[in-house]
Image (cartoon, rainbow, N blue to C red; front, side, top):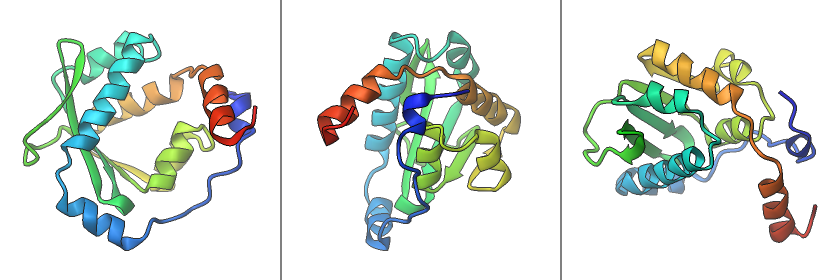
Length: 160
């Protein structure tokens, strides 16, 4: 899938945040990460960027997205078509995604194919691998609009 705007961005290098960020995040509550991710997912559903198939696939399932090098975790579920944080941080997840921040950024900005990231173990799936592969395939099939990103980068960096 080609994304001309994303391909014009500089390549995201392999990087790791300072260790104190991970230590700090591991001591803080993780619900803000889950709440932020759910807000973004619900916005994507409202804007019809996330297909109904994704909502159905996640319905009633607990999903964990862990960013290893920042110590951040987002545990969430989808109930009645709405993504919601799982407030009990001790709750188990049906599927768990693990990876470093730069790998997630490469995935989001389409600078690396999801299959390559998983094959090279930069991102991993644990638990219900059938559910995890279904989610990975949905991520790979998403068509992201280019214009909002162009405006965002133009406002932030004065570029078009």
